[in-house]
Image (cartoon, rainbow, N blue to C red; front, top):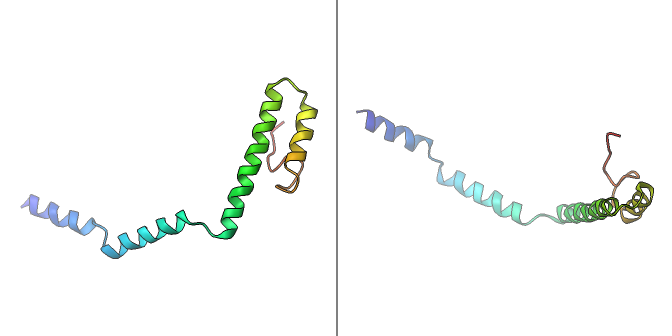
Amino acid sequence: MAGILLAVQVQAQSPEPAAAAKTANQNTAAAQPDAHTRADIERHRAMAKAHEAAAQCLASGAGHDACEKQLQADCKGLALGKHCGMRHAH
């Protein structure tokens, strides 16, 4: 009797076909972002490249001021503030 009860509970917890189709549609929508989201993605990638260049600059031994100046130039028009969208605790 317990085996039958368990089978009924498992069936009750299974997703309905409509729910599975809705999830599939959401996944398809996520794979194809709209124009605003695509532009946002590109801005984030550009900021990441600028920050990576700043990290490499600092790692090379160049002075903080020189690396910061280059970061500001690389990020012009990408993010708000002089730190290219990133603040430090110091």
